[in-house]
Length: 442
Ligand code: SAH
Ligand code: SF4
Ligand code: F3S
Image 1 (cartoon, rainbow, N blue to C red):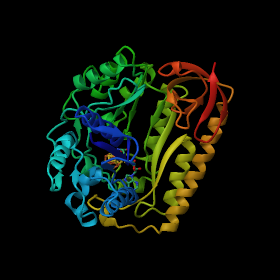
Image 2 (cartoon, rainbow, N blue to C red; image 1 turned 135 degrees about the vertical axis):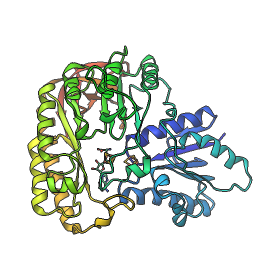
Image 3 (tube, protein in one colour; image 1 turned 90 degrees about the horizontal axis):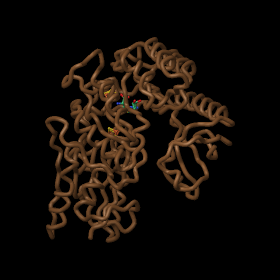
Image 4 (cartoon, helix red, strand yellow; image 1 turned 60 degrees about the vertical axis):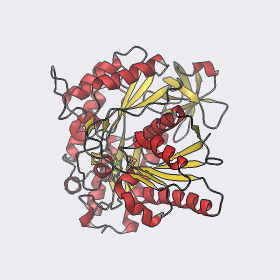
């Protein structure tokens, strides 16, 4: 019996993909384990979004291969996902004794590749980077009936070509999964006890663009949201990532009309300077973000927002950054992913180089981090004494207690019996940190 460990870097799509690969391998009789120790196969599911993300994964694979050369490491080491797709055979310059390289669109063939590598006494390396034509069948889910909150992939790839972004290279052209297939997966999840789904794609609010029509004034994405909300047992719906240009009136209205849609939206604005937005090829103005935030909050009182920001994009001056800072402050994002620009080979913006000095990037990043920390701790402290509706997802990582989330996606640590797992319960908030609340069942 072979023991496999999958190490995952990157975003939720990668986490979902790793779950899918694990399910495929289990079905073939492999043991998939959380720990690296004792695994005879290690697969590294990689991310290419920033230079640092790539270095981490290469470092990990290098470490494993080195251990193997010294007679300690796993028998097989593979690189999967975005960096495999993006760098392909070039990875072998850095990691010449890698056994397996599988791109984002060939993950379902991993059991086959591993089977052949294991059957061969002197295995030849396997590289599989082919592209799929449409949205082929989704990878299976964990299917162990214990997923209170599950990720569901509804779309792959992206056609936007934002100047900084490698995703169109790593994930290929935009493809939407047919609604029947999505709904069948969610019905099965609901039957097995799932209460919350997060619909995943790179630009989910453009779901169905090009392949499905608007009907009755509703975009394919909003239609899908309604169908998901109608599935018995599904009480909460989230979605990510979305692009500000995909927010039309019907999606804003959905936040008022569909009670299952959680009161939290991730609205990545990237920069508050119109000049930099244009250079980034983000087709909106800062004013659009202001209006959108206001209409979402009007549609759903109590809605919270999170965002993504890049500092130090080529050409960004202190004055541009000041506009980012003021938009960030003004809209009161409660959570944010804040990044220093990292030039990526092959992206439309790569020719612009990386002219913003590192200390300027550092200073701008630190400024936003400071604002964010202040904002999230203040807002969390304001929750003390309130009662929140919490979906209890499972045991807390540190053990002994339970973990759940509010509708605003705040993490809550609470005490209570494990029979609460899978239930939405009122929780009285008793304490707060910067990234979590503590409470007790009310
Ligand atoms: N599809 C999503 C984003 C995927 S990447 C969307 O459009 O929102 C997640 C985030 O990484 C981006 O929103 C951006 O803020 C950041 N990012 C992407 N490329 C980057 C780069 N080259 N350098 C720094 N941050 C980057
Ligand atoms: Fe990247 Fe832009 Fe597509 Fe998001 S919308 S994945 S940032 S190219
Ligand atoms: Fe990274 Fe690929 Fe996600 S590049 S951010 S893991 S889509």
